[in-house]
View 1 (cartoon, rainbow, N blue to C red):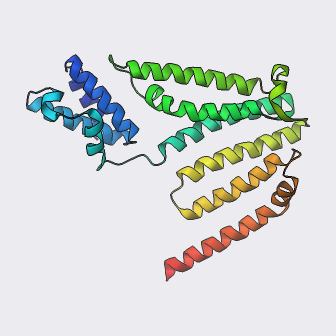
View 2 (cartoon, rainbow, N blue to C red):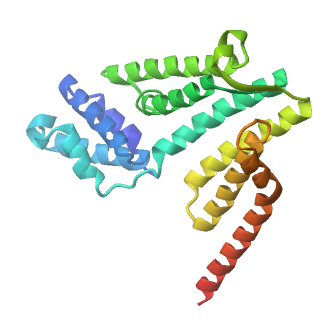
View 3 (spheres, rainbow, N blue to C red):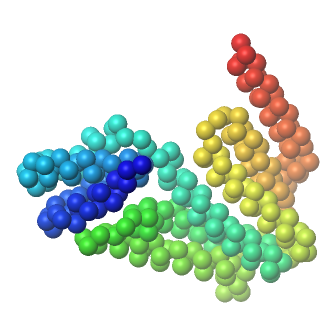
Length: 264
């Protein structure tokens, strides 16, 4: 299989500073349009080769803003599905593991505004991760460096918010907090992880049948998560006691109708 990234990099390094800047921008624009990495570098290689073949620079040969050229070229290229939400769910899973570890170690189940702030931080850091950490910074990669720096700042702040969620200094932000046994803490942490993992698989699943399974798991896990807290008691009781059975019936019926339609 041709390694277009290497081929592109070899030619890129021989370009003038202005052309390197133009192709850096084009690279970023294709990323914003969620073009898959392999397709992106193949397209960049073809564009840069075509330009060099005619012995011209970017402005003279293409005569377009990089944003316009990227939109034109990206129309026929494969895209990564739900790229933002996949990255979001991966980061969310990391911080969830951290939160559950704190919960099990401390034996305290805490619901706090700091966790909501942390969630907002994750939303904010995903674009900076995509345009910083996940991109190779070139000699003209000032934007990538800035994105990386902002991402790291947000990442560190979110880590601190989660780690010190039970701190006395953050008591003013606590909504509810309960000291539980090690078993209850582990059980709570387990369903928090199941909830977030199911969210990831829901986003990445390609079939409706699979999505239904993870929707059921998300709803049931949500019920188990809110069960220790003194709100939505009726909802959590219903979910914990009955929803898994209802969910299993829904999954079986859904699979039955899918199989019936496929045989028709």
